[in-house]
Length: 113
Length: 113
Image (cartoon, rainbow over all chains, first blue to last red; front, top):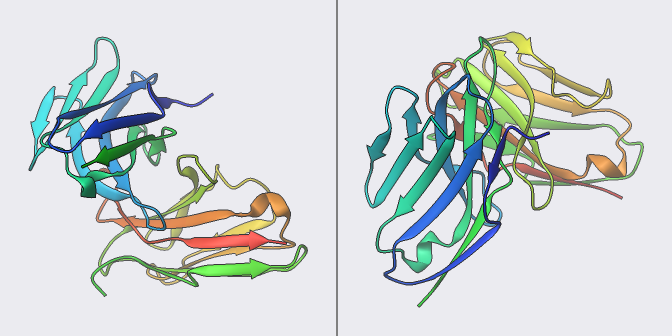
């Protein structure tokens, strides 16, 4: 089974709203997490990352929250814009030497103006 | 170049044909990853290189898949005797180290007919 998954496959919001995209992970040994944005026909684009020794990290208009107790990760996008429309993936890296990122299935964010 | 470059962008192969997909990572990046992304799914790990050493090939789906990175820079993913189920986008990513931000290329969309 997959190690990382997202709660909702799609999310529709109005321009200017705040968006919250959720992700549940199952590997308690994971120590590094990343959110990626993927637009149609493009490769995943790094948004923000967080290590397991933190519970919150902020970037420009984005915040990632990590709750290790319930193994939950979320991405908050402030003042969502039409250009934010894309598929968002969370990814985890199990804390084992030589392992690569494990991706979930993704949430499609649609922003209407 | 400034980013990860993959070629070709699109490849159509007849079933049974061999294909080779190329990845030029960001200069100086030690780690290189190959992922396979089926339509509507998240990327699935195929294989990982640290310099020229292939440290993990556990994600390669069959012995028809082969990857190399002979000089620790450019990498080639080869698929022999392609099958329809090999149709997917093949993504390459590179990073400075194992636990640092991974940058993805735009991918090669392989269609087997």
